[in-house]
Image (cartoon, helix red, strand yellow):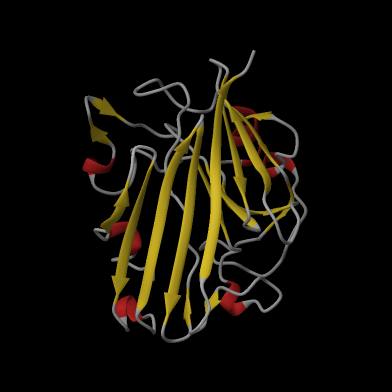
Amino acid sequence: HGGTKGFYSQVFDVADVSDKQVTLTLSEPDGAMGYPGKVDASVTYELNDGELHFRYAAASDKPTLVSMTNHAYWNLKGHQAGNVLDHVLMVKASRTTATDETLAITGELPEVSGGLDLREPRLLKEAVDEGGPIDRNYCLDGPKDGEFLAARLVAPNKVTMEVWTDQPGLQVFTGSNVGTTGPGTWWHGKGCEWKQFGAICLEPQLWPDGVHHPEFQSPILRPGETYRHHSWHVFRVED
């Protein structure tokens, strides 16, 4: 349920709303973007004492593929405040899912090294200078079941965002194409122009392309099952 008209481009219905949370729903017909099954999906956003929670759910009447996430772009310095290369990032992952020159998953799981090694807090500029822009799924070192800390992002102003999740992977994208690809309307608005490396994406998810790699956790959702995913961000200002 991706493609050129995936969930990201659809208008969801507001199913429930309160002071602290909102639940959005979407129903896609069998065959949408070539995917089998009528899929009923939902996402609940909840604010709770400095935490932003994302709870995803989906069901299908035929076997299909589902792996939902949030593709927000983050710059913890604020609006129109320069790039994020001065942010420090830690990702709790010892391996990544390797890709070829077209970014297709190869099935290899190399140990992190060079610019991809974010196991200790690292200035993004240093990582990018050593290994180039990052757009890679990290295989998180968390438990197979349960929720855990996946990443921590810290800005020069000491604003900190932790990413917690129950998913096995985290897509790290350092924003190398911000301001360089796509319609200009993507990067202009609210009196701001976003430029390369202007923000970073940290996207909890299943490992990509699991349908072609049986050793990965399967993204196949079958009738009678419910897909669930819970991730959240914790915001604070470090002393």
